Image (tube, rainbow, N blue to C red; front, side):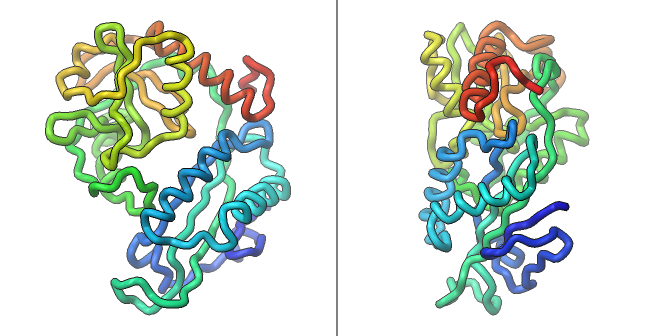
Length: 287
């Protein structure tokens, strides 16, 4: 049975109901997290919850019962669901109130959590995928993991329509990130990615990959790449909670590489060791 956590209660998914006056529905007034589940355990849960708190503070949004309650309820949901592999979707909106742009008084936020099916990372992650470049038309607080994702959705759809897996977003000639992932390039032997700022989301996988790159002694710069740097890069890849570390083979039809390059492969292996350690898996076990 698919279970949903809604405002302190676990219930079958088909019984979950949210008011049409919920501000998440009417204004996209809310935040979310997606947390990978492997071997029946959450991956990098502490980091996700820390980011949830940062997003909530940025929107002056209360987390009912605090983040410790969210943790307990998420773990209870996972235990009751029994899922070994997949992801948790967690959303908090400002709550139900008559439609008015200003924040309502004395409103209780709506908290929703449910688990989705997924697959284990496998050898297909060695295969490079296509991407296209697109203008970054998002708002200027991309560091907040807001449910307001329409520009991301439109950009992803443009990529899919063009036959690509992802869209690489460009703002004022600078590479920011992908539609739902952070992007990295290996340029002149140095790993580069956009620094943390309001222009990108501080991805959990991004952070782990950067830590591993430095541990491995890979020259690393958190420095913006120019759009033209994409086409002189030796390797490109993007990172995300469910996409892990995915190599990019072509951009706008121009070939970068045919498969995961040397640095991408090293970082994939290092990342999966960290993922396995965090979820209690045996190193190398991707089942």
